[in-house]
Image 1 (cartoon, rainbow, N blue to C red):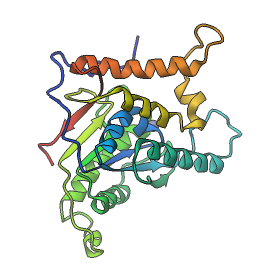
Image 2 (image 1 turned 90 degrees about the vertical axis):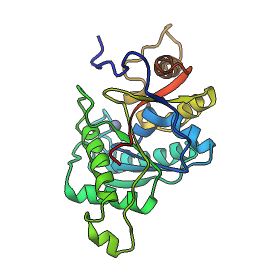
Image 3 (image 1 turned 135 degrees about the horizontal axis):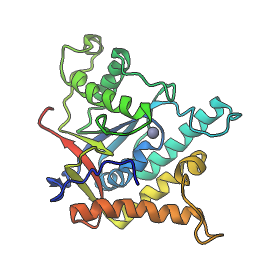
Image 4 (image 1 turned 120 degrees about the vertical axis):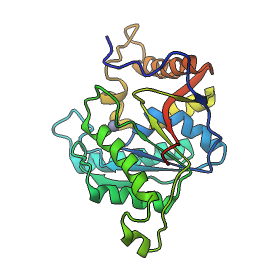
Length: 261
Ligand SMILES: [Zn+2]
């Protein structure tokens, strides 16, 4: 039995497909979170001409099961992997805050850094973790979700972090916030086969994570078969499940928030 609470309410999503934005910023805890949760949508928007950026909050230094692995080497590898994955999706260079993986706290200081990136890049759409997702164990995902939603509030209101205004950054209010891995989805982005394949290629850039993340709980069936093929099949199935809820073939599910922006 899955630990997931079914995120798909009966009747399908309230909305399907935003107009492709001119720009979007995806705010994630770790390298590879964006590609897993919203990679196909980012590929679709890049193809439509959107300017895309990643803000990666932690350094990914705990992304290994090998206690002897050198953390500095792992961080360098994960930076390179994230850059390659972003380029594969058609996104610009990622911004790395390099906070310690697994120890992400929701503080005013970090929230100010998130707001500063939003005020500098001025994205039309912001995408992040749903901080209200139930029964998720990893502390960074909840913290990254809170930093994203609170960072948006701080970026849009001029009373927050006035030093940034003094340095020439003006407040910025995005048009839409999309929360991925939603506790309760209300929106879907439909994607086609090409976007699905670009997402897989981007995910396969994370060579250091293939064993621990991609192939975790993927058995080689039949024996001797390439487990990556089984993983690719399962990843397509995830898009099929959301697509069947949305009535669109393949899709990625989100919680769309516009009213409070
Ligand atoms: Zn993560």
